[in-house]
Length: 453
Image (cartoon, rainbow, N blue to C red):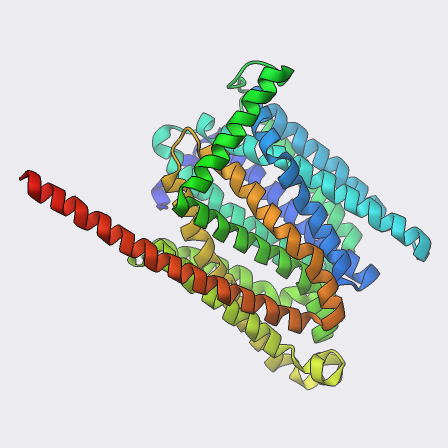
């Protein structure tokens, strides 16, 4: 990740158009998603309903990732990118109109919620085709010697757009222009992204042949199965994929609980969550810079273990900061407004810890997947990553929302922290075993070399 590399790829107009489309569309996607969570929290006041929205957002990745990867190989990637963003404009407009017509009748409110779930599902389903088409387009626009900085830039801005959209712009937009206005802005951003991808050159499909007939279906299934077999049989890759699934699940859990934490635990408005949780985004960016500079001094396995321990500590800290609502039965800032400054500082600190340590899990795990997957199978391994992350995340989404409504968000936060701590212990044992195995292999290699000489 060097500056000259970034400068070189950004001078490429076609790549810059694709990169700008990624930044704009991902920021709009994550921002509008969080706005929808705020809307559901205001309408229902239930973490279970928030979990249903997140489930609708995650399920398409499980159902469509493999199919999308095969279609991208057979259709012009530029066409997929244009149509994906254009369809997101349509769903964004529909969501804005739906929010503007929010009914007060409880009977009609149920229909309103179902409509939101459907639109969230459709928007996420569109994204399953956009992401692989975008990734497959990068090598077509840059020279091979610029491919590494190009992918690094996309990875960095992917994280940045999540933070910018979900943690900063969405809550700020709701405060300034309201939920409906924020959704209209997201739709406008999708239009801008559509214009950007329209500027890149048209490509030819990399594979010919339609997806029909028994032989084609069998061939497609064999390709999918080969990717899963490679991912599962290479133990280091599989562990890294599970770690990536953990960070994805934690992100979804926090997205589900944060609006309720702000409203029901602290006594703020749901959109005010940005004031106490923006440090999580800052922590992720700060850790990305530090790990890129100094991360090589630790093994990737140990770095991930440190990250899990840090996440557990941060979650316990958030539960402790909000524990007053458990004792007094009222949101903290409602009963004790004088605690606003000190409690907010504690929440911000632990959010910073969570952001930094989640990056400490995600970055080394992603590096392991990229380094140890060969070119022929890397795309399918990444498809396994998306499928596995969302598949594992579905189970907590089904239960955590209801559990938070029953026992309270701070207690659920403690439970999640304990689970993460146990996973850290398991990963520590795995890191020790991997280290010893590596030492044995190195010793055997030295012995063989000595014997030959």
